[in-house]
Amino acid sequence: MPRIPRQIPLLTAKDSLRFWSKVSKANDTECWFWTSTKIYIPNGTAYGFFGLNGNCFYSHRVAYSLAFGAIPDGLFILHRCNNPLCVNPSHLYAGTPLDNMRDRADAGHDHGEQFG
Image (cartoon, rainbow, N blue to C red; front, top):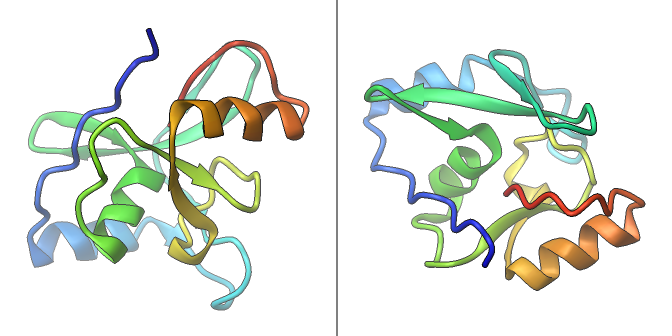
C-alpha cells in the first residue's frame, strides 16, 4: 500500500511569506528552486522540506497548497518539469499514486520509491 502524504495545514500570511522567502524565482515560466532544507532519498534525489508548527512538509506540496488549496485526499503532487526542488505552482499537479509511478518511470527514476 502506498504511503499517503499528510495534508498541509492552513498557513498564516507570516508562514506564507517565510515559505516564499526560501524560493529562488527566475520568471513565471521557469522552475522556482527551493533553497532551504532538503532531504535526500536513497537514489540521491533532493526534495525540499519546510518546517511548520513542529512538523516538516515537502516544499512542493506546500507550494501547491498555497496556490490551489487543499490537496485532495490520497493524491500526490507531481512535477511537470521533473525537478523535485521546483516549487513553481504552474509546474505542479495533483495525481494518483499510479500517476506518480508512471511519471517516475517515464523520467527514468523507477526505483520503487513513492514520494510526493
